[in-house]
Length: 149
Image (tube, one colour):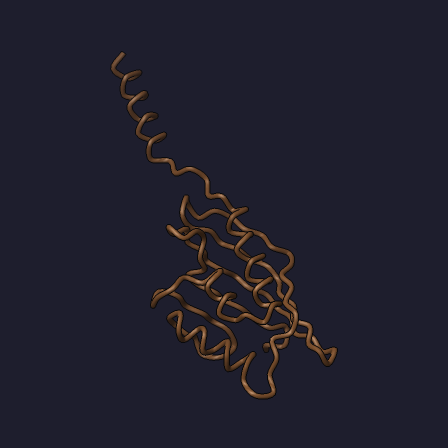
C-alpha cells in the first residue's frame, strides 16, 4: 500500500509539473502578420508584430550579430530602406516548429524576397520564440541567405 501511495504522489507531482503544450498556430500567425506588414512597406509594424522589445532580442546573420530591438530595427532600415534599397515582396515558406516548453518554441523555415527589378533573394531562418503577455515574440533570429558562403 505504501508503494501505491508513493506512486500516486509521484504521478500527481509529475502531472502538475508537466507544462501544457505550446499553441504553435499562434506563433505561426505572428509570421503571417510580419509578412503582411513587410509587404505593406511598414518596417516598424513588421518588427512590432514579431520581435521581442528590449535588449534581450538577438539577430544573427551574415553581418555581425546585433542585440536589442532598436539595433535590429536600425539593421533592417540600413538593409532595406536606405537610399537605393527596397523592401520587395516577402514570402515565408516551409515553416516547421516544435515546442521547447509551454512558453518557448523553435521555428524554422525559408524566406524569399522578390524585388521590382525582377531579382530575388532567399534563404533560411531559425527563430527562438517566447510567449509573453503580448503573445508570441521572436527572442532570437538566425537568418541566412542562400548567397552566404
